[in-house]
Image (cartoon, rainbow, N blue to C red; front, side, top):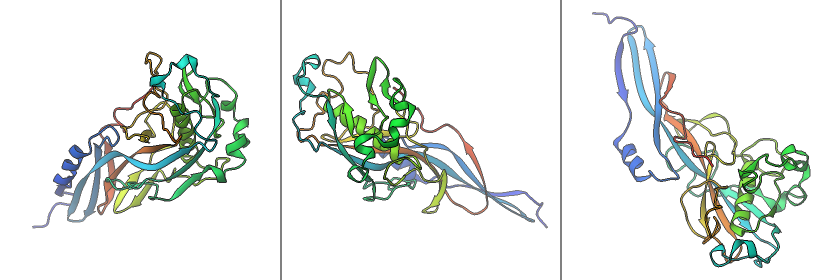
Length: 298
């Protein structure tokens, strides 16, 4: 007997046990692995429709490592745990260099990434004169209007401004100064057409790689992990966090215990991706939740 047309014949859900195991193993503050929806693949013929369902997975990828160095030396190095904040006796205006390269584990968790391990995306010494003197960034209103694009909540708890995106910071705590520099580098490389010498990691909003259809994050924003957040890796390895945390009630400040004796700091930028395994047929995407979930804010 001939089958009725457009009758659903097969529904297969490709959620493997190994993926569920990975979810439990990688469920830490940086990765935030979630099943955020489903991708429905439909092939219809005169004999009916085959339907296959694959899970839409969301997680953060470690896209780049940002290395911040202090070419003027390490005279500012001190630990806020050992010295009261109001009585510092060093100059707070310094210039630092930065390099951003693809993280060694980029794209290795589940969803593909827009970066390649070891590939350079920003080298501040090649970004002259913008990195030294501001260049066209100095013309952006955020560079001279207080409270715009601040890391933290201006005016009571600002670590510094994103603009102008130079190597100069006015910050008493060395770890915070390095964090401001890292945020500026992340801001540059996650955008297109910025007045700097760099390679963008913004990527296409949706792309196909490694037999997966992947949705990319947008441009990095401060004070939220909606498009990415940071993992300090040197001088010590930590969980992911947002720069700009309110530490006014902390006697040692955010920088306490985070000072690098050699003046060098390294931060990994993790960015949120979602993806589905590709199957044959037309695609219908159903999202169960927004991602990242939950969104973290300062």
